[in-house]
Amino acid sequence: MTTYSIKTISENYKMTAFGVSFDDYNDWAGNAAKTAAKKAEITENGQLAELLALADGQEYQINYNLDGKPWRGFGVMGEFNVEGAVVLDFLAGDYLVVPGTGADKDRLADEITGKVFGGLIQEITEYKYVGPGNSTFVKANETGEFYGEMWLRVIKVEKN
Image (tube, rainbow, N blue to C red; front, top):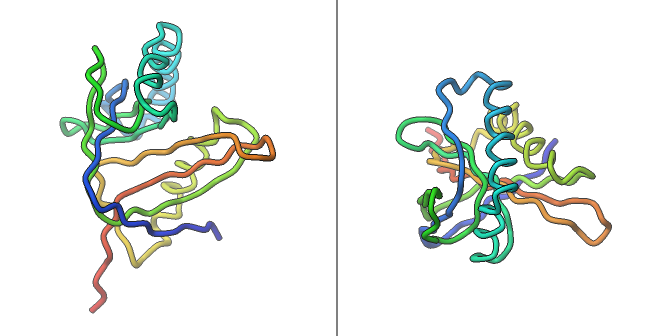
């Protein structure tokens, strides 16, 4: 059983990111390729480093519903005016927090995302995911492994 917690965020917040929109949410291979290409592009051209330098240095992988389409990107906490980046609104409320650990920093965010949407979200019946987005961060822990968390806004389901 995967552990999770519920944490309450008292104020709306923003994230700034570079990303790509998807035409078909179920095209897993195509979407993964588009996401990887975008990550390579913003890493190579220095845009991601510029964004990280403006914020606290913590990178997030972000899934969002942008203009009615699924969108995935990489960014930071906070609102920054950077050419080509979008500013995303995250709302105050209860957040489902799902942790994970692993040896591969680049794969851990995807592993946690897969765990959440591959079954965990259906197992949690007392809360419902409401979006409009979610974010995952990964950082090194004291043992040299990597630790990450996915945060998803949820509402408590009223039982009759």
